[in-house]
Image 1: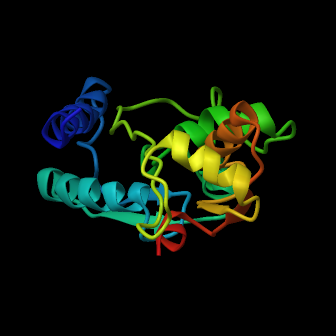
Image 2: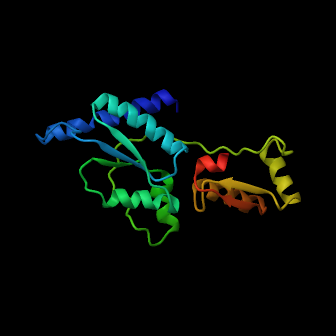
Image 3: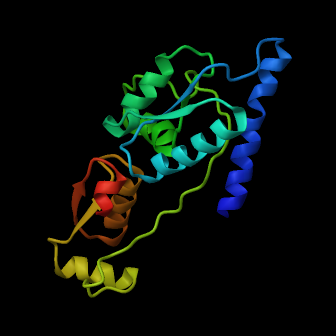
Length: 194
């Protein structure tokens, strides 16, 4: 999916928001600044997209859309904050499949209900997973990487955190390939890459 197509979908979704308030004969939305909560640290992909969208929404709707990073606990801290906020449309969440599908599946006592506590507004984008290695590693494809991991069990990989989709994906590869690599969790995507 191209960035242009994603932008069109997002813009169309958010452009429809003012129509909801007009249908209720209320004031045009938004009449005050809007908080867009990102449940991850600054510098990652979700944060970047939220900042781009917030700027464009602010320009289009004539009101501030502020990004509020509330990272921690695999996105739970930010999601819980939004779930407990007033349901007035002035606190939005940049949710991910991790916060709304993985967390409920792997955490039995989740402090928010992804179905009851949130209402979907728009699909913002689709993020593919890409397996990459340092150029100095003698593996140019998955077959070579698995062979290397079998020969060097000290091989490690970094992810954006324990229980994240990249972590679960890597563990699936470990399981299917019969290898054991060391997981190095970071506090977000940006630190994992650098």
